[in-house]
Length: 364
Ligand SMILES: Cc1cc2nc3c(=O)[nH]c(=O)nc-3n(C[C@H](O)[C@H](O)[C@H](O)COP(=O)(O)OP(=O)(O)OC[C@H]3O[C@@H](n4cnc5c(N)ncnc54)[C@H](O)[C@@H]3O)c2cc1C
Image 1: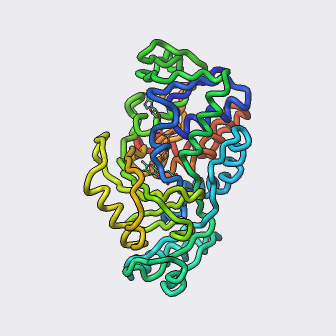
Image 2: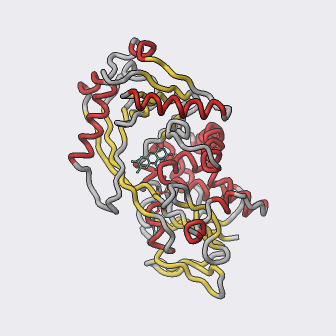
Image 3: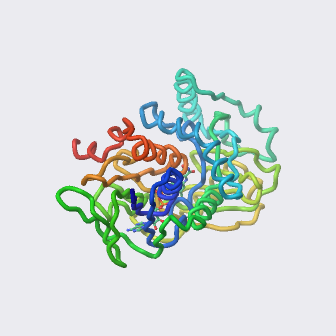
């Protein structure tokens, strides 16, 4: 069975790798270079609890993905000999005001009742652990099971895997323009370089997915910066409302994110975006203003109207969508991929194909 995958981000490449391993013929269509879209831009937090997600089927999906990550990361490392720096550092969510503290404690209680871990720490319990702590921080919640991966290393590893597998057909610099169908069935993908045919197709084109098949996916722009870091600057991710701070396990950089704006595909870093991130850093760990800035960058989360993904059958038989992962696509890559292996290899259709169907928007 020949499966065409449109988009070489973490979603497309994870599905491609897993299906290839199961013996499927895989074709990847990528407009630019694989692994350089949102998946390269991201922070790499695996943070369903720190994100404060409501308890619902999507939250369960995220928790399952978090539980899968260790073995997902190890399996990619074993296949490629490239370390992806998965790090079970836990994530600390600082409260910069009483109102934020109340909300964080309420959420913590909700998660604990649901059987998840987490604990409140007063300011005095944390301030001695760091060289400096923003004056507004009155305490915060530590979620020990939230974690992180270095998403750039992960993308390099996935890219390495795909490039080494000569049986995976990779069309880079090739734009998918239109889905070709006949009598309600998928036939092929019209690209700017010609027609590619296959037995099935998965659209995994991130924030651009809506351009290919008119599904409600749109870009949510995010800006990021990175600074130098010393090992005793910070020992885990800080996920605050003013900024999140992600020390890489290698201590080569601190990644600081992220702004969020609905401005379409408007390129560039803005002064206000960079200022917001730098102020967030200063308000959290003030001594970090002494560090050198390494880089700033931006990208586009694949958003949907209800912030949940679109993973389901498409509008024609044998067409599928795996997109709209918004703020959690790094986290959700292994579980999204598993749904397609279960479907194609075992004929097992997950209930998530109904929960995350694009039809939920049409019904509304
Ligand atoms: C600033 C920021 C921070 C983030 N932080 C986190 C985080 O901490 N944790 C987390 O889990 N998630 C995070 N995310 C979200 C995460 O990055 C995305 O949800 C995820 O990368 C989406 O993966 P993807 O493969 O769908 O898209 P992408 O990685 O964008 O890949 C899509 C690919 O499709 C290609 N493409 C587009 N159109 C076409 C076409 N017509 N034909 C062929 N190819 C096409 C693109 O060139 C691109 O390579 C963040 C995102 C941003 C922007």
